[in-house]
Image (cartoon, rainbow over all chains, first blue to last red; front, side, top):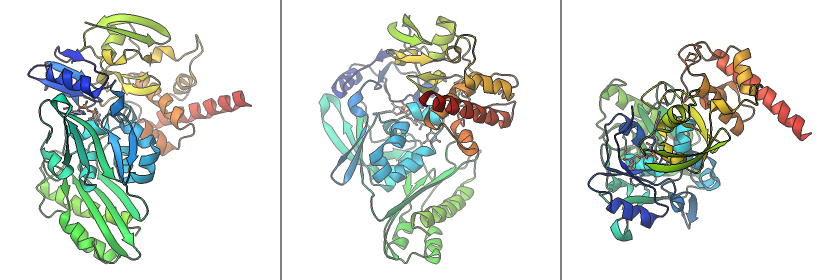
Length: 286
Length: 162
Ligand SMILES: Cc1cc2nc3c(=O)[nH]c(=O)nc-3n(C[C@H](O)[C@H](O)[C@H](O)COP(=O)(O)OP(=O)(O)OC[C@H]3O[C@@H](n4cnc5c(N)ncnc54)[C@H](O)[C@@H]3O)c2cc1C
Ligand code: FES
Ligand code: FES
């Protein structure tokens, strides 16, 4: 099928993009890589009046470092992420999750910011951003900027803190260097499929003790979730199979996953426990 | 209508397109490049895969206006006159197709794979073409074809460098 007709704007700077969004009428859609938006427009599940295409806004693309943070431009594609030396050094959890997203052709166009703004609970990057306590830098009408922590960014199913007229500019995440181990464990059944459940784990060891643990859950509710009970059980614990297994048993606490064609809710909760165990064992080097 | 400037398979075009025109429809209907096909409505099948500035993309999931200023290569642009591209030749020789519907996209995805990884393992080939579905072959001969092409293409490059 073919999308319904729309007016098209192709800005080259963030300021031009904000003006185009402001001038676009009632129903404006921002297009990043288009890998989620074009399919829904083709099916006419979305029929925006105006599309503002960010492809040529080059200032939004790329990864840089700022002190202890990595700053990822919203238009950085999934393949840019997988080739980036700073990500390879300090952002391995992001790289591991990105590798599982879709297929190479979709990764050439789809973007880090687009995947987060889309906020699909089955998407692989939201849980990673949440586990890392990412900060979302958002530009609004007139160019004013605000920063939203990941815990407040993901509001509901396909819904974020982004307001009409706003644009996601960049995402800041802490560098995870020396001492950190990471793992993204994704469960799906066929090629290029979304996660039925997935778990993002980052663990920092000090000798034989776990000093810090960050665990994000994909597709265990209408938004990504933190496995807080597991994190609390791990911090200060010995790195051993027993402690990790006991902690992972709490991974489904407080989750309300959906039931659908792929899995029933109780099976998703079972998967969350199993995958958390695997992810934490790998991240802790067990 | 929006004016676009594109190079497709080595020729330059200046055309007016509606912003909603998908790249695959521009290629097929405006340029007559019907070698690139549409196989689904969900961006899953990969039959429509072409190269946009040297990288594989699903041309049903790119707007024609987004190709403005870019270079597009389709299955129709990879042979050298009457000489097939080594990947085309390998699909032919290894029987990497039955009905042939997935083949244009399979070949474009496989060329992209070898560009990034000239000597892929069987597992890497299967991952590299995971965005392309074949309902006929069971993939075994497709994987063999990519292996054959990898062998031929790396030996010609080494030859050229020597
Ligand atoms: C076949 C297929 C398989 C896939 N499999 C997976 C998978 O396994 N895991 C996974 O995580 N994803 C998967 N995806 C989705 C993929 O990750 C997309 O890249 C991503 O969801 C959307 O990114 P995009 O850049 O294409 O955004 P777009 O499609 O352009 O935009 C998505 C949404 O975000 C909004 N948006 C985009 N950028 C901004 C911005 N800067 N500011 C404000 N709003 C913005 C848009 O308005 C739109 O609503 C798949 C997609 C396809 C086609
Ligand atoms: S036609 Fe199926 S992915 Fe493009
Ligand atoms: S040969 Fe028929 S779909 Fe692949």
